Amino acid sequence: MALSLAVAGPASAAPGDLDTTFSGDGKVTTNFTPKAEWAIDLAIQADGKIVAAGVAGFGGSNAKFALARYNTNGSLDAKFSGDGKVTTDFTPKLDAANSVAIQPGGKIVAAGVAGFGGSNAKFALARYNTNGSLDATFGGDGKVTTDLTPKRDSGRDLAIKADGKIVAAGAAGMDGSNPKFALARYNTNGSLDATFSGDGKVFTDFTNGDDESYGVALQGVGKIVAAGEAGAGGSNSKFALSGTTPTAPWTPRSAGTARSPRTSPPAPTEPTGWSSKPIRGSLLPEVRTTRGRTATSLWPGTTPTVPRTRRSAVMAS
Image (cartoon, rainbow, N blue to C red; front, side):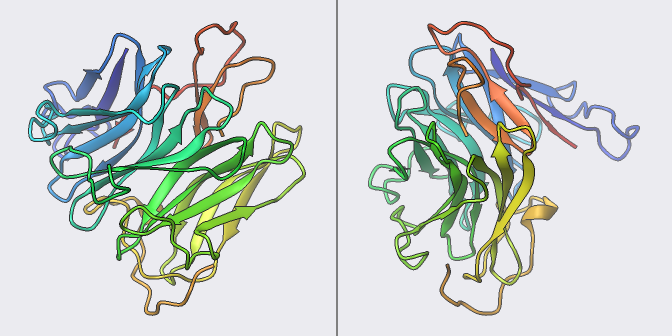
């Protein structure tokens, strides 16, 4: 399977028409492996190039973070890793990039989950230079994993401050009795930021059940807002939001991206700051639930059940 993108047409076309200046028909698919793969998130660079992130090789024994960068005409950007595509391996299990953003200066940060097929999955981040190579100034090799609990933890979204610090949000303790919202903040070198809750990590509990964060953004006053689901898997789960006290000023997730929930004027001050789970009755791993959507597929050796809706294509309008 291939990663897919579609772009709406220019102003001269009828509203909603596919943009024929993008790959000839407004659509692009990109193949990484013979297995399943899909884009989960994207960011637009200041020069208009498109960075899509997701998972490659799903359904095989060793799925990986996958990123592709496209020129404005939809062709793969050969200046990015030679062929426009990058895969990054964290573990022998399932690794998936669930979010991507552009740092000030143009470096690319992807966040997600490492080791999903095991019992102790972790938050995972990778940072890439503008040419697609891993940035060795981040975590020593361009990769960082954070173990929040002895159970499965999964990063779902990220936001980047003007000073380059990274906030990742997701769920911690999945497969346990009381999963929680989880946030982690990282310094520009990939280390946890000890000025954030003392150890760089924050957990928020809404219910005695399953609480999971799917998105994160930063307000103009520097506060961090996480959104998700409280009581997931129950008969009356709810919208859930949590907020932190102010932190440093920040920038939108990608320069040049008009994504209104991500944009806000910079903060004036610098005070100190503050799931992937099996689908019912099966071993179907949920790669990411984001903004109400769930990506699922069979892990080798499991039996089919009815999965939730999988997001298999990215559309930009």
